[in-house]
Length: 482
Image (cartoon, rainbow, N blue to C red):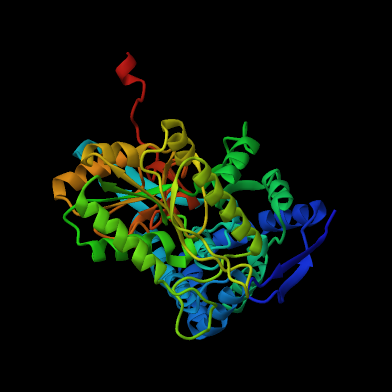
């Protein structure tokens, strides 16, 4: 049964979107409509699809202030951060077109010897079918867009179930696609919460599910799809991301990179650093002191205020409460508070960054900490004996999304890449650094071997292999068996 659904601004409580959750009848109609629209959309030429995608990009460009403001209003993202998200969403248009051309363009494979020259070997790419995109709140435009764009380019019909905390942005985006000329049946908005997603996943028309979310949600969908191998599942999940700093790094430089890694977007990026490792040296002590000092000086505030803040609100007061519970649990495990989180007296969604020191806590407490997943401005620092110990400690988590190393040599970084078990591994740059021309995805509990980014087109289509001759030839295929 449908129920009322609201999206409320974490800034001032204003209702930005209101409607009802999609119930069983709504989901059934939506999935049937998508299945019906699929044949016509996939029959469109790639040139027609590209033209619509580019017009969508033009919509984003023409209305970037409008959509970036809405992102800030709905999920609390600071103005400069929201504008950066819009820039990334615009760039995704041409990057996705390029990715399709490089990775999913029909090709003919040349014969390696003369006897095979009569037979043409071709690879064609077909859409997987009806795709369900489950979007997150933290990048409500860019992340679902990074899956919707390649899915549409490949000829799929898309059903989009956004985070219930970002439905206003989702509706704006879908309407921008319609203004760009996309037939409404090809991309449909399905508002709702977890139950709506479950209903859509159970639909017989479903061909693929693309989720950007947490480990719990990914595991639940994986279980729900048990026994349905024909439904492709692409998971982009969270992380417990490490950053390792060596003695050679200037304390102020280390502090800037680590604080940005941990606290950009108020810690609401899946690639944000959660654990920072230092050596047990005097140099490391200076690095940690600089990190705490710089973090304490970060400006917290609301979007659209001056001076421009560096730390903004979380998506909701409930998110603040959840982060406080994680902080308390870490302290209960034996972590020493270096910087305590402070909630704003004027906005219950605004909380300052926190740092705790896990050096010397018991092994069972370390294991529990490494299993945890949190989403907010909270960093754990830990000092270890040497680089080898740092590698081992950084990798001791079921997650494997992002990691970074500061300092060291190219050989040491090679060791780090090999040992840390992450899908995005950076050297002398933040854990949050990612490039549109590269794959983006995690290992272990952070994904299921379906990297997005430039490689998202791979899970949006199926390669079809063909051996072709214009006419049958007079060859006895059984000759070798005589």
